[in-house]
Amino acid sequence: MVLPQLVALAFLAVGGYLLYAGGRRLTTVFHILRSDPLPVRELHGHRGPVEIEGRAVEGDDGTVEAPFTGSRCLAYTYEVEELRSSGKSESWETLDTGMAGVDFVVDDGTGRVVVDPEGADIHLEPQSVTVPPGTELPERLARYVAATDGVDPQDRVIDLKVTQLNVGNEQRFTERRLDVGEAVYVYGQATRGPSVEWGSNLVDALVGDGAATPVFVISDTDERGTAWRIARGGLWRAGLGLVLVAAVAAVAAGALL
Image (tube, rainbow, N blue to C red):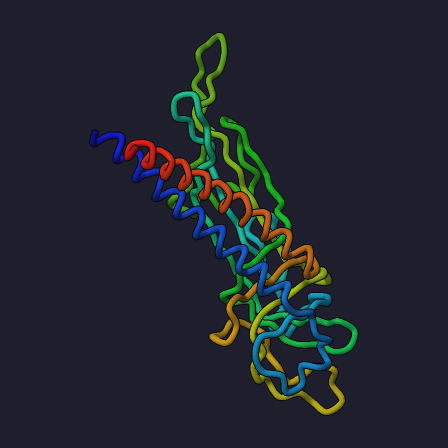
């Protein structure tokens, strides 16, 4: 009886985690949709949660260099995955993730405001490169792998005389960037910003993370597009978690009858 109980507990734990993770995403969607973006010019003296939309432009801090493409951008996230096999099943295992960014400016035509991306939940369109085993990596990816302890090159080849055998796993390198001039949506906390010169269209506010706002989101689409992007991940997690928890409950109920 011990093994079935352990399996049930494992299913219950996974189901509970998925419900929690999905619920957090759907809560973020609720906060995004319950109010409308403000024109940037109205952020003069505004303090507290705020939504803004506009174009992301370079601020005083310039740009950062994305790790896989070398593109100059305002913020980026990256993820490295490796395809692992277990029996007849395969799954992608995450080897490394990271993010970086600099303070940038959102311009919506009514004004400009500085955004500090530190601590943001960033949702940007992915750009992925998949490298089959036995393939030599492009130069930038090769330099990244050589400098990263948790990621090993998968380009070894065994010469069997009549053929060659690739030794390694398929790898996927995904980069998400907020590029200069791109559309951007921000939900965060407005606080007092740096002083501005007379006549400047830069408002005296700074949008970033903070205790007064339940979430801090940066996305490269509009409000509704951002909400849908986050909701998709929340719905499947919450749905699968509910199925697992309900299955364990049904089995437990049947055992008691």
